[in-house]
Structures are given as C-alpha cells and as structure tokens.
Length: 349
Image (cartoon, rainbow, N blue to C red; front, side, top):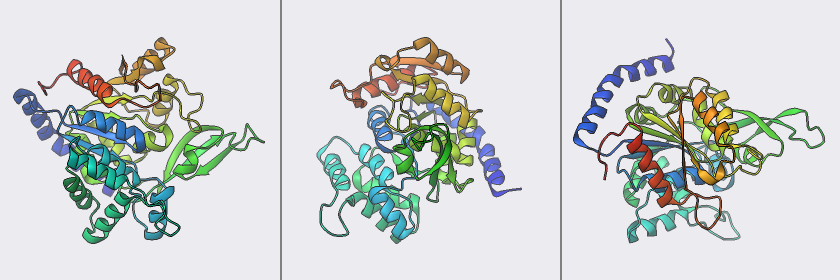
C-alpha cells in the first residue's frame, strides 16, 4: 500500500464524523466552513469577499511561484515561495486600524540599491518563522494570529513545485509546434496557446491540514485567478484532487472577469471550464459564478457547466471603475446568495 493510499483511506474513515459535524452546524445555524483555493490576486479577491460572510475560512494556496521576491528566496533558501501565502494573509486582515496597518506592513517592498530591493516584508517574516519553527503550518498560523487574520492560510503542498506547460506556438516562427515552457512566471506570460500544465515533482505531497480542510468543508471555492498558474495547479496534487472529488462540500468555480494576456488570451468563459475538465475529468462542480457582463454567450457557458454537473449563477461582481478586478462587497453578496440558494446550511448572518 502506498503512503498516498494509506493517507486517503484514513481520510475516508473520518468522513462520516465530518458529515455529522456538518449536519450539526446546519441544525445550530453555525457559519459555513469555507475553503478557498487559488493564488495571487484572484485568491485575494475571493478571500476579501468571503471573510465578510463567514468566520470559518481557510485558504489553500499554490506553491509554484518562481518569480520576484518569492523566487529569490526559494532559490537561495530552498523554501516554499511565500508570496501568494503573504497575499492571502493580507486579504484576510480586518478593516480596522490594526488589520489595515498590518496588511500594509506585510505587503511593503523595500526599495534600495542592495540585496533587499524588491523583497516584501511579509515574505521575510514568513520565511524567518519557517526557519525558527520548522513547521510551515504553525508558522503561518502564528503570522495570521499576529495580523488578526479572519481565517487560516495553508500551502497546498509541503514542497515547492515547478510548473511546466505544453504550449503551441510559443515560438512565433513555428506557430504549429508544441514546446515545454518551465516556471510559473514564464507560463503566466507565455506567447502561444497553453495546451496543458503539470507540476514537478509529478506526485507532490499535499499538506495534510489542507486535505482535512477540504474534506471538512461545507463549501469549496475554486478561482478566480490565473487559470493555468494559480487555479489548475491545485488539481495536480493527487491527494488534494482526491479530497476535492470526495468531499461532501458543495463546489463553486468563480470565473475571471476577462482572459489573462498570455496564458488565456482569447479564452471564452466556457473554454475555461473545458480546460479545467481536461485536467480533472472526474471533478464535479455545483455552481459556476460569472460576472453577467463577461459572458457573451450564456447558452454555451450553461452547456459547459452542465457537463460538469453545475448550474450557472450570473451576478455583477466587477469593480465599478471598469477594471478587470472583483469588487469585494459585490463578490461577497454573490457568494452569500449562492450559499443560501444552493443547499442552505443555516442563517449565517
């Protein structure tokens, strides 16, 4: 029996008690347990919304970043890239003076002519605590406590991952050729059409607390975010994918407001779903959330969602300034409505 099989069997034995716990929360009107998966600005937008409607929130964050401050720390110290974890913690900070002050502090980047240039304070703090405590989860929990974060932040894997993509037309001189592009920062901006992605190592270990959180959740939210470099990587960690497929939680996929230059240029909303399904053909969804102004062909999106077992919910969730960013209040209202309409668990407000 492999280590992965043993761990997942142990998880399965725990599911019945989790189901009872979920039913108990329904009966007492407790807040829903929500797990949000992603990375970068997309996950931050989702967390900023979700913390407004539940106090039981866990972020599971990608660990494949290899650019900027995170990439430098990863190369020099062999640590998990801390940048996306830092952004998630900042998004969970409260709106009071304490929360907003700490959010600004950990996001602050040094500007100098020396080695500190470009490093974010939060990245250095997280890595320092990893070295002090020797435990990724305990260190992130401690940072969250310091910040007064409204939720928990966990890495999706215990080892740093390298993202690799098969890209057609990466070389403009050979538009029909397919080549391998390495590194999340490179994949995110690659010319050509991304066909698929995978991670190295190919069977990375999931963080057990992340798997537990998914199995124990009432709702799991995937996206928005960079599709190939922040959203799909969660499906490439076998234990985490198993948990996403086996959880009794309802699953929401939150779509982006616009294609991302580079990795999803020219993608329609339904194309995002088709790509997701190719990477995880057994994963079913319950709800696909999209901004109503970002869906030119509603029937095609509905058909694509139905093939994944999901219904489509359209709402205004974009920032009113016209930028392709989510408005936290509008996104929170959309999530709240979805949680209430699709398998309501209790009066959370």
